[in-house]
Image (tube, rainbow, N blue to C red; front, side, top):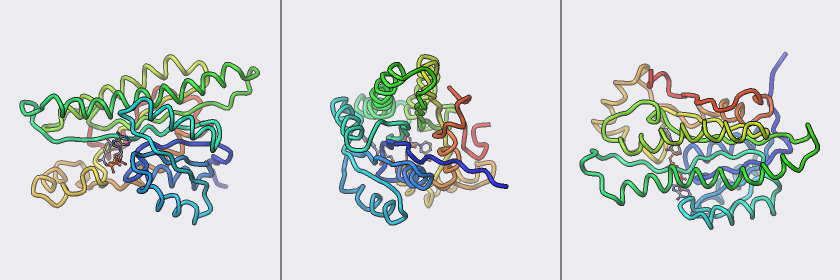
Length: 260
Ligand code: NAD
C-alpha cells in the first residue's frame, strides 16, 4: 500500500524561484504534477531551471517579477494566469536577509528587508488571493477546488537571534500575516499556512558555513547540521495539496528543533 499526493491539473506560482528554496519548491511541485510558473527579477536565471523541469517531463513557465514593485507583482500574476491558467497554489518565497547589529541598521537596510519580506509578500499574496476569491465566489456551491498559499517565513520569526534582528522582525510579521490571511480567506476555501525553515544551505547564507562564526552556529544547533533545500519537499507538497484542506493558519517549524 502507498500514499501519494498528485497535483496534476494545478497551477503553482513560486516567487524567488531563481535559487535556493524557491527553485527547489518549483522542482518539487512540478514533480508532483503541478504546472509551475517561475517568478524572479532576472528571467535569464530561470531558463536553466525551466529546462531542468522540462527535461524531467514537468511543465514550467517563466515570468519576471520584482516583489518590491506592486505593479510588477500584478503584471506577473496576470501574465501567469493568461499564459498558464488560474493559480491554485502560491509559494510566497522571495526574501532577503541581512546580518547587522541593531545599532548599525540604517533606514535603507530596514526598508530593504521590510519592502521585500513583508510588503512584497503581502501584496503578492493579496494579488493571488483576489483572483482566488473571485473564482471562489463565482463558483457553484461546493465546486471551488481551493487555493493554497504557502508563506515562507523563518525560524527567526519564532525566535530572535543575535545580529539578524530586523530580519527576525520581518519574518515574525510574515507569521502573523499568515494567520490574518488564513482567518479572512479560509472561509472562501483559501488555505494560508507558513513554513518556518531553520538554517538551510542556500545562496542566502552559503558563504557563512565555512566561516568561524558559521561553524560556531552549527555547533549551537540541536543536531549540529544545516538543512538542505530538499528537506522541505514533503511539507511543500503537503501544504499545496487539497488533502490538507483542514490545515489553515498553521505555522510549521522545519528547523530540526532549533527554535525549541
Ligand atoms: P536565496 O537568496 O537563494 O533565495 C531568495 C530568492 O528571493 C532569490 O531567488 C532572490 O532573487 C529572490 N528575491 C529577492 N528579492 C526579490 C525581489 N524583490 N523580487 C523577486 N525576487 C526576489 O535564499 P533562500 O534561502 O532560498 O531564501 C528563500 C526564502 O526562504 C526567503 O524568504 C528566506 O528568508 C527564507 N528562509 C531561508 C532560510 C535559509 O536558511 N536558507 C531559512 C529560513 C527562511
